[in-house]
Image: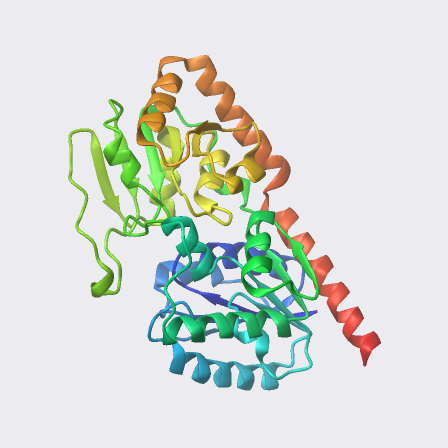
Amino acid sequence: MHVLVTADTIGGVWIYTRELVAGLARKGVRVTLVSFGEIPTAEQTEWLEGLRGVDFHPTGFHLEWMQDARQDIEHSGQYLMSIIEEARPDVLHLNQFAYGALPTEIPKLVVAHSDVLSWWESVNGAEPPEDEWMRWYRRTVAEGLQAATAVVAPSHWMMQCIERLYGAPRVRTVIHNGRTPVLFNAHCDKQDMVLSVGRVWDAGKQVNLLVESELQAPVCIIGQEQHADESLRQESFVRRQGLEFRGVQSQSQLRSMYGRAAIYAATSRYEPFGLAPLEAAFSRCAIVANDIPTFRELWGHAVCYFRRNDAASLAETIASLRADRELRLTFANLALNRARQRFTAGRMVDEYLALYKTMITAGVAAA
């Protein structure tokens, strides 16, 4: 089997792509990988070294959620079609909406990782204002979804958003994201520290709750502090004693921090899945999570919830875990066990492979 996979190098989709492509390659699947957004760094691509059967095409074309992406999407679509015509894969695994509308008979799988409209609603409590760019974005996403052979979302909540905002795709399914457990250390000695990972500038990640909650615990926040677009930058958060911002960290640095942290704070108010809480779970952190539908769907009773978007409740919940070692260990083990049972990369890859085969068979039958 030969699969063409598109990805972007900004954010969690690249981590997801690493797990997917490496898993497919280990199973003997040939992969053509095309990336957009930014040219990846050497650290981002080191996992590709020595991986057989993977042909990588990095590009710097802008992504569809970027305000100045319109012309780039047209050009990147043309470039992608030239790769498709040359490679002739059996199936297209598209991690952007726009490419679902590409004019090809090859089965097209579009994965709805997130979108601007559902993000805006979650952050602002209302639909985004209409302007020329937003009308273009709505149309582009809807056309890509409707033209796709199948659509996947990483959670049922995200799929419901897609159906409500853009219409129900012809074929749709949920495949939860996964990570490789052995990449993380679940047996480190834990420190009295609260960790949170996410883009500081992203209101959807809502790390400001950790600043507002005036926790007595040491807190470490990891992630990009300023938006790449200068016009969208906000003032930096006020520093206080016990609160540490570490900026962007390497994967090895992140694994070390997860291993040391006793508690992970999942503060997001918008989270179609959330790889960072999963990585914390594989590191045996007790997870304190915002009470949003996605976290309830994915984690059930394996994490400790605080009242939605409430800094005081976050502080109270963290304080209760710090004060009760047995309770903290119980939640740490619950999160680890649920992650191992439901959210491994191996399970994710197998589910995608099964879907690819179904799509290819259906395409052959239709022909």
